[in-house]
Image 1 (cartoon, helix red, strand yellow):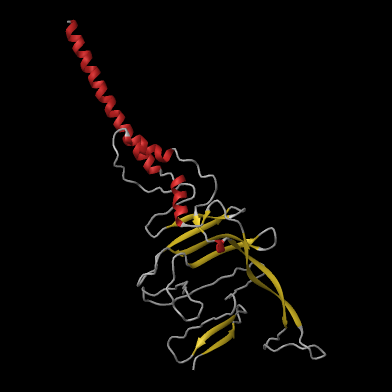
Image 2 (spheres, one colour):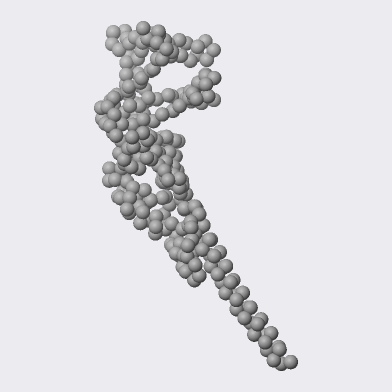
Length: 299
């Protein structure tokens, strides 16, 4: 028989929940309803909320693991291929804003970028960071190995095949591009994704329970009520921002419009300078030859 055992630690006054039974492997499934929220709450002076995953093994192939798993199905237990733009997982960071609500500070998002493979799922990782006014995509990491930063875009080394005077045009192609007039990196968002998630607190009145889990009754035999604080996510819709586009084609056009490749500019400029230096050297050699001939004729 498999069961849960709840004990109290005498040293830290912290309940311990253990899975016990005859089986070697015993899992614990938490299946909340509605929003599927499981909260770990800690408060008080000098208190830190800690979620530890301790693993004791001498086998180097085993380790603590945190997994985010998604199926493109509304039915629990049914596995359906996830699709392009499926959000596979998000790690979010909050603080408390001036409106006394939890406000987003940053988040890391894994998003699917193509059809599901037989073993692996193509994806990208995006880092969104707030400056206190809005939260924007700052660092996307693609599955092709490229990474982009909002300030210095595309710093990989290109291959320059042009020669001669064409090199200057190659360098100016990026150097003459305008400065991006907004913060954030272009991102695809459908109409139903144009919202921010704001965590709200609300009070809920429930029956008060004693230490044994029984409902506390008043003198008249009626349940004693108490108020508790709960949290819920609220969608706050907004208009499409300058860095939000409806299709990937629009995003690609926007990237091409403002992307400056420093390596491309530097390499093309250096090769063009080498080309000019060669012309100058040739001209100087002809001048020296002409000067030498004139000197001989004068003799």
